[in-house]
Length: 269
Image 1: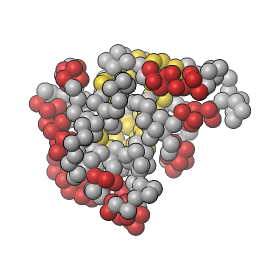
Image 2 (image 1 turned 120 degrees about the vertical axis):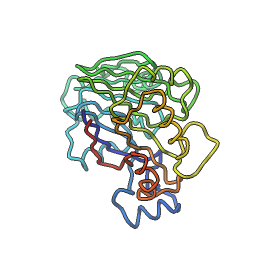
Image 3 (image 1 turned 30 degrees about the vertical axis):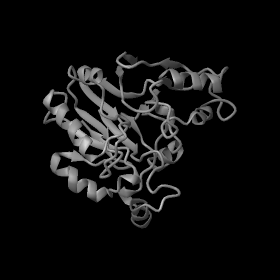
């Protein structure tokens, strides 16, 4: 299995559009891995994780063909992950297809938003619920409950399994509640992509992870056996407000065996 990180930035990307933060200034001046578009990923070239506002530029930059996707799986309805308007371009009048070539997986808010925006369009939509499996070909997708956003939304992190390999894609997590920790005890991850949104800035907000919370999550996952010595651990969803450049994150996390994610990174496991 291969996960291709198309975007590794937080809600406003890096550099942020209107920001004079140190990290935004550094990214403008140096480019490279410090430039982060809004978080999204692609698994094995066929399962698209989140379809946000930077989707077109990510597809063009990585020379991808969206017609190859079999699924678009959304984590939650925040605007940096769910740009509902991007769905319209697959069908008439922009194309002559009678059906989209992919199945849409999303929670009840996302499903309702798509049906409300495009009530007569022939999208195949699977409404997802935390801890309930769905399938797409020989892939099994299992959302788990994140601690992020409105309590009225079933915000997801997503477990993807295929061919004996297991990936957890977790962009907006917070510190999980106990039912999620308990569910994960029955899984052994080959790859974990985990947010580190708040970087070196420790805040009381519990919907994202700072660097210390990131390390605490990894430690607990190791203790309960979900993460092993063979698990590849990769970061994503970095905010410029976390006050950490790519190199500074590497200096902190590489010694722990963690790969700091960047736009365009491919991880095979």
